[in-house]
Image 1 (cartoon, rainbow, N blue to C red):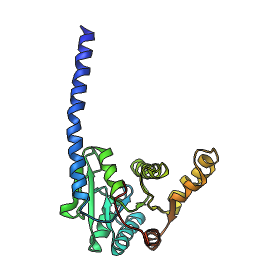
Image 2 (cartoon, helix red, strand yellow):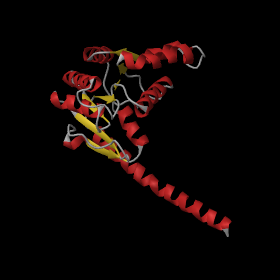
Image 3 (cartoon, helix red, strand yellow):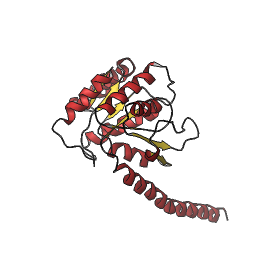
Image 4 (cartoon, one colour):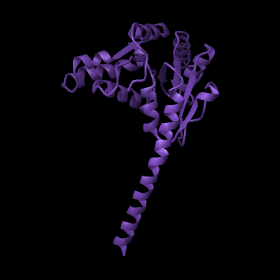
Length: 228
């Protein structure tokens, strides 16, 4: 009897997994259709816990404003903290302000600086991550937590393995990021787990002007298009 119950429960799981494909497909279709209309953008990542008035919140506003003034839209995760700061900077510059929201049990809620027609909701992290990577011409990574590191290393891995085109990955905040970069150089590289050229995929800066200069220099003479 117990064995039959186990098999019944397993079959129900398999059925639910199969039907989930349609929901996943729907999120991809909706995301592709909306994001393909937006044009060249730069994604800004960072902690949802950073408050207005704090150093990196205000720097994120300035970075997003400067990037918007340079002609790029801004994509964020749509929530509070650094995400809010990124959308705020885009809004202040009159630029495109996109929010890719995720349904979470804490932290996440829409911020008020997202364009009404560019506010997308996702249930699946992996679908949302595809939208960031496919439609971003660069990643600006502010200080953050596990989610920020997830986005950072996802992009580095995809570029390193030639799954997507190379684009600028810019870490903002030398004081915050230097320990991680030192570990990558002194431990990961020394162990032979990455190549010296992989370090060239990451730039570290401390100002909005440096961010814009890196992005502009990278795309001088290049065509802007989705990444895969």
